[in-house]
Amino acid sequence: MSTYVNGLAPIVTVHGAGTLHHLAYASNSMVQNTVGTMPAPVAATDTTTVTNFVLGFSYTFTDFAFYWDGAAPATGSVAKSGVTWPVGTSWTNATRTPWGTSEIILGQNVESQVATALVRPNEVVVYVIPGGLD
Image 1 (spheres, one colour):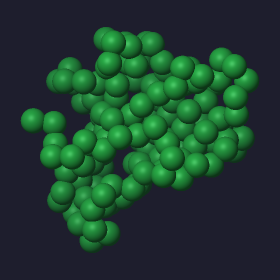
Image 2: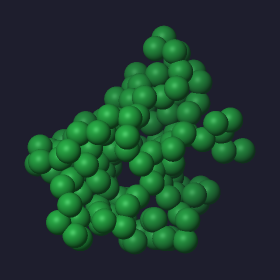
Image 3: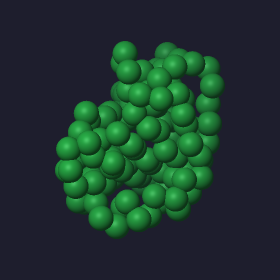
Image 4: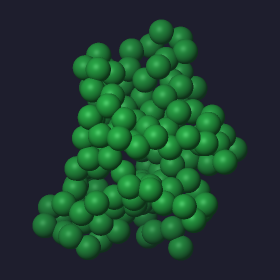
C-alpha cells in the first residue's frame, strides 16, 4: 500500500495536548524544504482527548518526515490498514514517509533537512479529523 497514492495518506493518532511537527523535503523542482507545526486542538492540560491528523503532501516534494512532542506517545497508520507504528519524538528520531512507496521509516535523522527549511508554523499540509475515525 503506497503512501500518498490513491488517497492513502499517513494518519497520526495522538492522546491529549502536544504538537505535530511536519517536514516536506527533497523537492523535484528545486523548491526550498518546508517545516511547520500543528498543535492538537485541545486544552494544554488535556491528557485523554484523541486527535487524528491526516498528513497531506505536495507533488513538489518526494519525502516527508514528522514527529509528535506531546506527553503521551503517538501512533501512525496508513488508511485503515490495521497496522500501527510508533511516531518519532524529535527530528533526530523522526518518522519518514517517502511519497509513492509503502515504506514507513522509523528513527530517521532529518535534522540537516530541517536546518535548510522554510519555517511555516500552522501552515503545513496537516489536517485534523474531528470526531475520530470510526
